[in-house]
Image: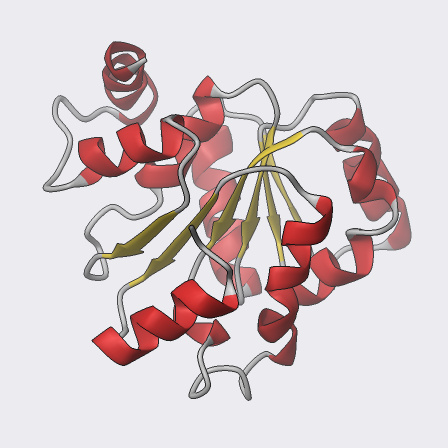
Length: 189
């Protein structure tokens, strides 16, 4: 699978080689292991879940705190021919139903959700999706110092009860204490 990952890196993203630890991280994710990633801003964290998403049969859900970031990442993925969508408060009811239908029919590989939309959807339509990977972007938001920013980040461990998929948590901003807290709160094994 690592050879396929390298091909996707070249064909879909235009890079000849992986940066630093991307290949090791992708290999860990592809072996269905939970993964905690601390990588600087601009270090290529997104590739670490986007490539495994493309190699998996099911849906990768990406929890992200910022609507603008979701839109930018989805537009970039679509420009590269990758089926992606975002699901957040900026959508109309009709747009939400269209995305739900696309997800359930297998037409979307990566779905970016706000933590609030994820929590409200987990026990409804999203429970019928075949989720193969959960990516928590800006994972420092689950820590004590970040949860005031978005309280629903503190509820992400509830996914473990309803989704049987590995989780990758990614951040550029975390001390060793915060990393331990992320690991504990997300129940990473």
